[in-house]
Image (cartoon, rainbow, N blue to C red; front, side, top):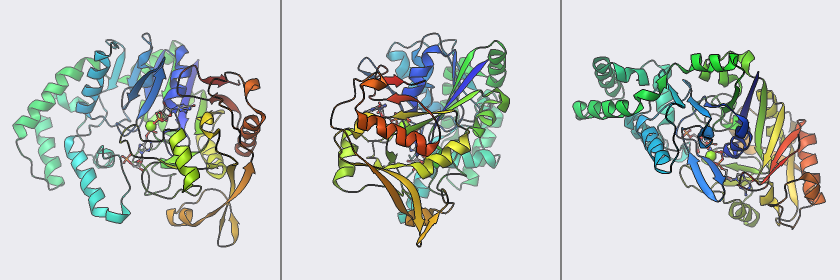
Length: 417
Ligand code: GDP
Ligand code: IMO
Ligand code: MG
């Protein structure tokens, strides 16, 4: 049996979708298990760009089944838009897209609350994607949420919707119209709703190749990330079982996706952040603007302290190192090998964001390279400096690099193992 998890191991946007797409060529099933439409997953195939928010990236392969697991929070309206856009671009997913009926819904109210909360926080805002993710997960754990299956029970749904607005002390205007919109979207989504844990279990028993597509990244994990500057779901490998209903022993292999440098969008500590010219150059070369919100991403050096932490939390079997091409022409490159706080070298990643914001990174400096590596498809064709950079990352993280990405296209990939 072969199942493989592909997880973001930094602050999100590590090019998970590119790796899912590359390795997904042989997958029978691709599954999302957490997060929601805060994700922006980009795939480029022969010059054509696709951005996914809730639909798994495997949908581009016509024979691949795709599952949105119960751990995802689903905005039914956004999902319908995303599905219609896919249909318009000629992608047919009839009979091969399955959405867990127990997934909680993100409603327009949650988006309103998300934006309101950010405004209230002022300077201390999280810098969320504004997609209603935090409020939706909060309602879920407080047992107030509406789930997709509630759409099949109109009376109950009406009662729950009223209770939800009352709880949040937001005036519910035109309940009937809201219920009609929900019924409308239900008619569209109904053919895709299922108990996906059962489907996954059957496929697992049939030896199907199942791929789990992580969203966000471990440093944004609700518990293990830089709280409170995190997302509201758990992004680590332990979350796969909870968000799919497949027992933990069904996860055979875990690949962590790391960018060759660091990026972060939103607020919060970023120990290796680079400001000024070099940062601007990396942002420009890497086209570092959010796929969901279009915000410029903050950039930083590769942080091996954080990388070791996330490799351990996820139990990685291997790494994929992406956007290596972006580092060409930058000059000398740095990798963070340790944190110093108040004159002492600290052990590992820190639990408090205030401490993380104060650490002084210790750096290893490596020579850069000036040639364009975006058409290199084998390790031997890389310049020595790029190979040395890969070796340094691999040694410091203590995990084998199995795949290197040197450009957004499917073809711009070097397989090492
Ligand atoms: P995800 O959320 O982890 O799937 O990543 P995003 O799609 O948000 O961001 C990754 C961005 O980098 C996308 O625009 C990709 O098309 C692009 N990309 C992926 N791999 C590479 C690469 O190796 N080199 C370059 N230059 N861009 C890449
Ligand atoms: P993918 O899957 C990068 C960040 C937001 C903010 C914090 C909380 O594309 O890697 P939220 O809207 O989740 O409440 O925002 O998390 N964030 C992401 N950053 N990539 C993502 O997804 C992200 N999803 C959320 O910018 O800092
Ligand atoms: Mg993204």
